[in-house]
Length: 289
Image (cartoon, rainbow, N blue to C red):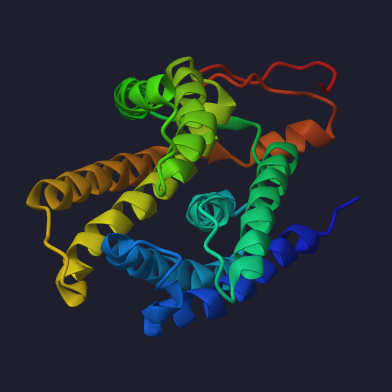
């Protein structure tokens, strides 16, 4: 029996529908953040709203474009949902108490559950077999592994002095929570899975790269918006954000381009056989797991 895909698509649509008015309002009327966001962070809030508005438009488009067998559309939606989870996680955790705060909480929650159910749907109904050339696989996995190797020591080094003194910083503490608890573990797990040629890494890693690209590109845009708010531009932050977002885009695009998803895997599942999750192995008959 074919299961309806629209409950998951409805999550995408609702997330996009709530995101768009909140993001557009913040983009057009940044004064809604005054008093709840430090003045030096206003350019970042506006750039984040710009990316969120694009995400809010993209999700409904993907919802109607998604068809059975179009796994890469689902992966794009997974990446967009991941971006919204992070972006509105910042607003939620940082207590951005303006008129849209309840909307921020709703988008934060909906994007999380949208990711969960989209990933589950991909695993249940998507192709069982995934293949990618070994060189691309190692390159993509290495890029993913690089993120926790850099950011875990960096964030922990910033946290240790705060832990010694008991100081509570007023802003951006949400980045520590989201990165250390969610984003870096995801990069680490999927990097290992990709090195081993396992299905979760091969299939889900491009979505994580899309999440990384949108987040870091938003930081680059924030630097460009700083003159509008009489805040000095940091050339180092600008170029590091541009280069890192370009790396995410390159690795994610290359991985997705070379990723081969075998639609025959779905037929094998229906006929009571399963295929291994490795990148290079073939089908193995046997009972479904």
